[in-house]
Image (cartoon, rainbow, N blue to C red):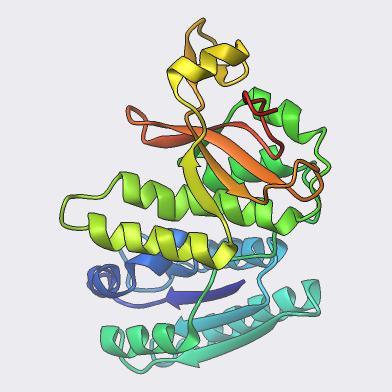
Amino acid sequence: MRIVYVAGFFKHVLPELQKRVREHLESGAAVWIPPYRSTAELNINWFKGSFLSNISRGATEILVCLFVMRGNDDLMNIVQAIVEEGKARSSELTVKVEPFKNARDSKGIIGAIEAFSPSIEVPPPTGLDVLPQWVEEKHAEKIVFHPRATNAVKKSQYQDVPLVYSAIDLLAIEYRNMRMSSAEGLEKNRANLDAKLNELGLSLSPATDASRAGEQGDEYFVTYPLGSKSTKLLDLHLCKGSDREERFCLRIYFFWDEKVTKVVIGWLPSHLDTRAT
């Protein structure tokens, strides 16, 4: 994780950042530290809490874009002490504090952020046993991980664990962006989805239709919404591999819930039965 902090700057800088580096602010890779109450001084407690929290989550590189008013050496010393505390907690951590002379220097801050290329990504877990919790922590606003999927993944024999996590990221980001596109942005978001599918070696296709799904009983249906007696068809799937050997063949069955704008994953990573099986 590469995290950048913007701390001590005047409030009017924030709208400029939201225009130019919004994606980093929304992901948490760039963190705006607001002033303390009605003052122009940075909120040091807010900075410390966020800084140490990101270290505990695995941050390895941190850039602090910092403005401290002239003569406020005590505040600068406190920032340095927090940085040293973070380094003591993680031997892999590197921190650069970049002082600014102008509290209104939005252009300089944006340049520093773009040069630093912050990223919130961390390596996925090495096993599928924590997959449901990982989805909840990372994609709760974008994905519903159905209890049936939780039960299925416990029995998984699939060997390419990182691909499973990457495939779910694809559903949460590129696929969801495509489904939520305006008419103007649809072509671009479809191209982004296709590029990501190609990068991962995955295909996206219909899993079945309602008439054929009925031939397998409840195989392609999940109870949804959760807690109700209604059912929904898992009509789509991500695929890799045609071998029926579960160690090498990936299938992620899902549907799109237009009402809550979420992907609902109902089964993975093995095949569901079809008429060909």
